[in-house]
Length: 282
Length: 112
Image (cartoon, rainbow over all chains, first blue to last red; front, side):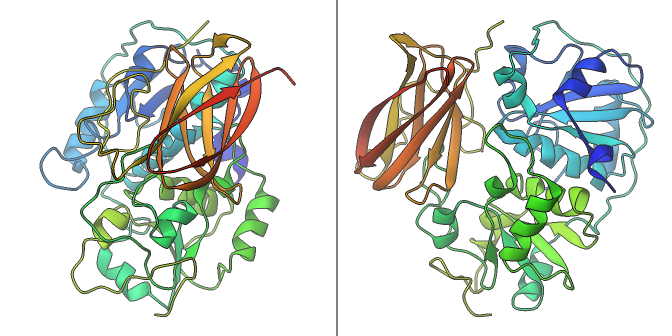
């Protein structure tokens, strides 16, 4: 695994907008961003409507994912280049999701929508349609997805990385500060989880920091390379960003994203919760 | 070419909500600490600017994109915050001390 195989620059993207077998996919919660202007030729995915089961709290199943990619015109041997707003949170989430279902060649556009816009690069409003394909997904690769029981078992034994903002970690806020704060569940963090906000892995323009900077960041935060790692946030999208940094950029092998994240853990009955700025006892 | 990022977004999720919309009815200003304002370059509002909310230690907390009228909005907590705006017209910062309720702050950007 190397940076070049998983991350592309805006310049590379600009030069490959019309390359055969390369599909640009914008992933946002707010799909009006795509409608207001997107990379030429890019198709869109709505992280909630397209990637979540409409009833249960879970992902769409293998058959639904196959149907989704087939109708969007994405083939198994296409290179999928994901980008989006929110510093690529949802694009990173979709990257992890594509990997979960075994897509071979997925990349992230470094800096996402933000760098593209700040660079004043071309955005168009054209409708994009691609001929349908017949996509075949793999069974979910659960070596990269953590469930709640493994998270509870990881307390005080494995690396838990809370990637939310320091105020969410400490329990002073329940959600990112661009969202209203009223929530049902408890505030705080999983005991023994270290706090490494996802934003520390990114530059101001949304690009990822260098491999050396990332290594130094996680080492200084106390991440133990000899242990397995589970990253979490509030709903699993910011932790996908950190999962990408650890697993895809730094090549750490045993890293999982806990997509249930704080909205699940903070609502469980009987589990331990730590408050304040320190990891707390297991 | 300009891009406007606005529209109706489900505020229960993580996307940036519509920045020019009235506060949702569910927001209780007795409890919430709202930081809102306009990004300007000179006298002109800047749409599509990226506004970053940094906490008292300078740590990133949240980011939104300004509306067509240059507006931004955060739901924070009482205390000291820095707003940092990035735009094609340049960047700029503003530091504020806020309490519960509605807090208005202006951010000016200029080419470096």
